Image 1 (cartoon, rainbow, N blue to C red):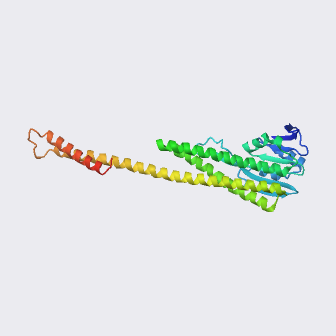
Image 2 (tube, rainbow, N blue to C red):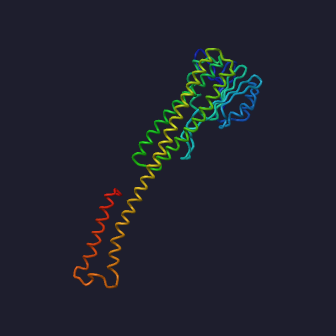
Image 3 (cartoon, rainbow, N blue to C red):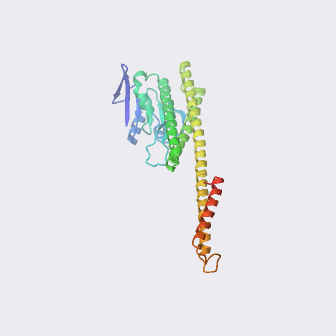
Length: 312
């Protein structure tokens, strides 16, 4: 689906056809004929539009026939029904700067473009470089918000794990870890791409715009540092809980082994007195009580020894 937005008297208006100085936004579902028609109408290489659909597309930029193409990663919630998948993934947003338009292509629905749309009435489509920088800004804000959500979820799952030690909570933490891997990779490549944009001045930024881009690089670096910190904390937490669970299992096995020993020795005594051979005190009138007292005595002594060694 193709959307055309124009800023008229500080109001965002959706129009039917592209005009000079409008923002063109492509959102799913996509049709090949729409790509062909839009490419011909706005003089966009069809490869730029098709590359935008690749979810694994890396952040990069290139130029073809004076049409600039930029790919940047943004976070989004994962709608997969698989319980082992990450809670959040990263998807590409493609920005195409033509002679008279700015075009964004989203392979999935994402929050960054929605935020940009909500503030579009404050933008000037004729200032295309500033439009690109504002899209970058919304993407960085999205990363920050999702990282805060991830940290909050991590704390919740850790607290649940302290109380239950269940496998389900461990799997939830693993899903958080997968999300952080996506974030760290995307933030690192986004940062490199922005730094290269600043160094080569691919967009032809003026001094004010270069300062804004430099601030965005700093914010991206901060988000990357946060993601790395959360990843390290989570890795240490998972290792610690794995050791705790292993130690708990050893303690359980130790207790079961102790109980087995305590029960096996009285059984040995009673089995000896159950033999059909002459044994001491077999003709005594207290023959029934002797194995019982002996078994209880052995059990008490062994239990006291194990408790002294703190095996229980």
